[in-house]
Image 1 (tube, one colour):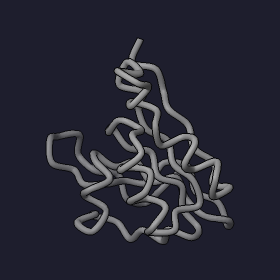
Image 2 (cartoon, rainbow, N blue to C red):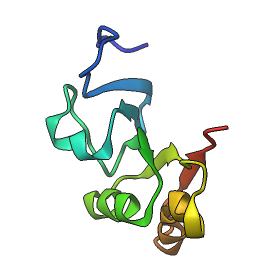
Image 3 (cartoon, rainbow, N blue to C red):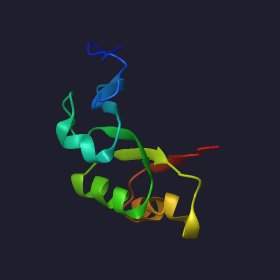
Image 4 (cartoon, one colour):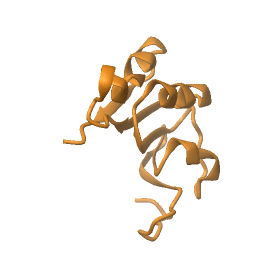
Length: 103
């Protein structure tokens, strides 16, 4: 387990999930909050789990930061599959990514 356990209240920027010698799973409200995280984040080693939809712009932002992998929400897939539009982009860059169903 981690030494840092945040209080469960609105406004937590991030906390660690699973940790290993290879890196950590960082759980965060929004990918836009990475710079304001309460915990250190090392993108090349860490996988981020966030509560935003997995659109192409979100994936592009995370890819630019160099995250090892990321998981978001599918937002009900949406029109033209926009809720999961970032998954093919992640595939093109050989970065593991997933979208969790809202259903």
